[in-house]
Image 1 (cartoon, rainbow, N blue to C red):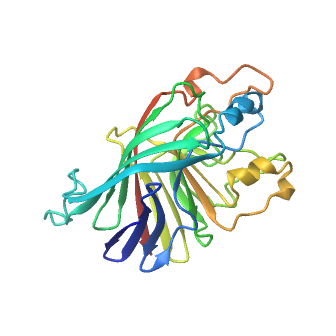
Image 2: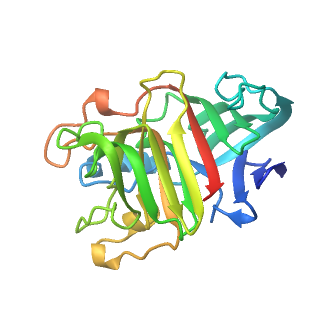
Length: 296
């Protein structure tokens, strides 16, 4: 394990996976499980015609492995992070370089990645992802991160498309704004459980409760770069397994998915396949997220 400590925070990163297993602020844990990369979603009705290929490729059973983890202290590279409010130079940050892959057992990696994690002196975490997808794999359901946050962190606040669920091909009924809710209220109550409750074109999302808070934001250099997210009391595995909404059982955590790309919904259950422009079909992905754990 690599342990990064600063004023009021202690983070732990597993050198075997290259993933954070613990985020503590003032000795209070935000994570119920390690953060991981996420390529899967509970199939929607419109996903069903193509889900057999996703299953054949075992996109629902991937894990992350680290081949090399190195670290150094350095001055923050970006001007905003590198200066204090009074204009003085900021303290050194910890830069962690990680060579990783995302794969299922006995299959070739779906993603090969060269990522960089920067932990700043104020506790912010910058994740820069450079991922190359094996072109033999089909389009992905999504690509992003999944966090199991403390179940006490129930309150959600975000700036993006809302207030209802919105996707890249399903957002014209929504509008941009700051919206609030809870992890339980953001889950759409479909009779057959499935992927739902995502919010498209977001700048930030904050999850908080019982004095703990996590803010996630896009940190791409492109000022127009945004992300999608959903928050739920159910895991995607639970949503996929149960056939009726009344059978669902909360997992005890607040499940936060932050997506660089989320596939559209489409109409393939009774119509054509999802249009190419709404698919997660690139062979190269470059994106950055900023995470800020804190006690409030």
